[in-house]
Image 1 (cartoon, rainbow, N blue to C red):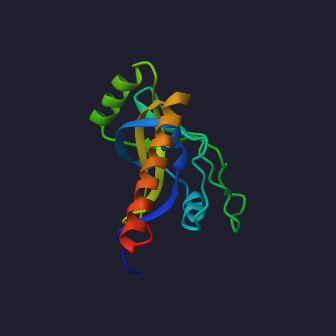
Image 2: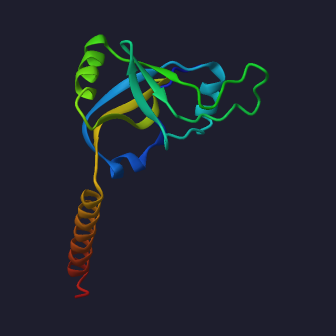
Image 3: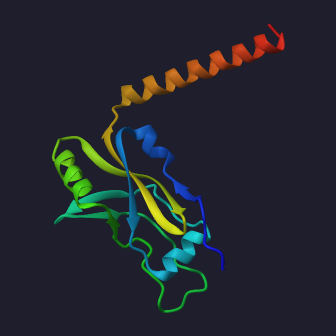
Length: 158
């Protein structure tokens, strides 16, 4: 069987970029069981309520939902179990220092296969307030309107 190459996206957390200001990102490996990998290869997972914590020098992903493998037997996994993330010691130390600051959280942005290994893109993020979200939406709408008007001018429809 040929070795898998490249990056295959499994799931992304689009809501995270809306609710948080991303300060820094990390790529982490994830400890999975066999039936979890099979479910992920089928493209089934949810990062909607997921978050990461640092406990006793280890980083854990909590709240991520990987449904049970349909062809699995009694060896199937629990859908919402805590999963250990694999990071370098200096990255964990940096995360411990940053999460001690008030208002910073560890949020998973996406999950993908990189050269056949499951990876999680983890973000160090600060929660947005309601007015920040409104300002971002207004800015995106303005940029979209400018792009539309430029497109119309190029096509000669003005």
